[in-house]
Length: 121
Image 1 (cartoon, rainbow, N blue to C red):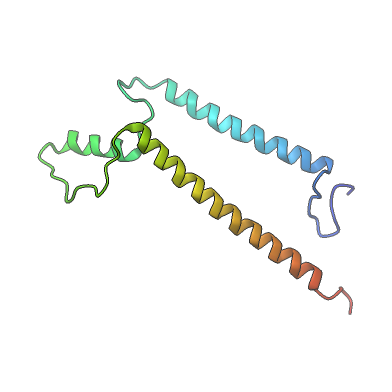
Image 2 (cartoon, rainbow, N blue to C red):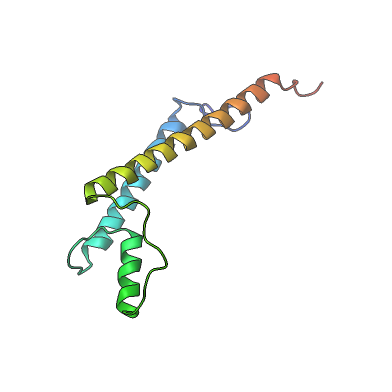
């Protein structure tokens, strides 16, 4: 119980916290490795890492050659690099918002824990 508090939470810097962090890192590496291994077995010509929008459009055009889209895009990036950059920016902003929400909820819980009356009173 050296790495845990009375409420069962893992304290930062404890031996258990280090093992949890190492297990999470190993899981992330395994997921990425498995995804790359699965993708390397595919026999696809052209772009290997295309988005779902591109894959869906190609499939629809192959299945229904007379299909006409309902509307055109409002903004079409000038190149693949610009499109990738915008996607990365979107992902970064989403990560910032998610991190802010998690930090706010964690701080709120810490304040509630400090302000809570002691047990048994």
